[in-house]
Length: 157
Image (cartoon, rainbow, N blue to C red):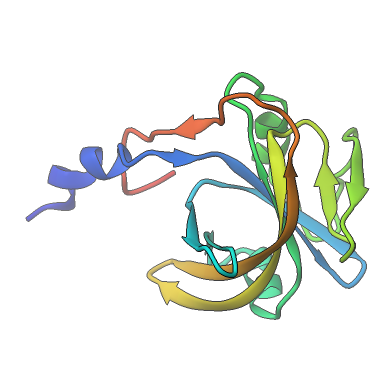
């Protein structure tokens, strides 16, 4: 069976839109993420998929703390900002209002809310690494609908 026969349906599996910020030493990093899922109640856990060739995959594999920001459906500001991509320690926070979590990770203003994460393990899945992370804090900051992402093709972003 050709992947082209199922690619349109695979792309229509809905996901959220998130910004993942990570801190490694004195460096900040961040990226857009869409493959996120709750993975446990006690303790609260989530999974986040990151391409293996991204520097953030290395940071998370080493146990660097992270913050996951859920984007708002009707506000594309953070989506546009983080779509540019940033090198380690680059100008990711330039022009953004932010504060720091207890672990020093950037919590960016303007999202629906955030979850503070501590990586607990990972598994490789093809070209992505799926991280299991414990939710150690966070807050809902706006009572609005979350952004939902649906792709036309399930074989690329």
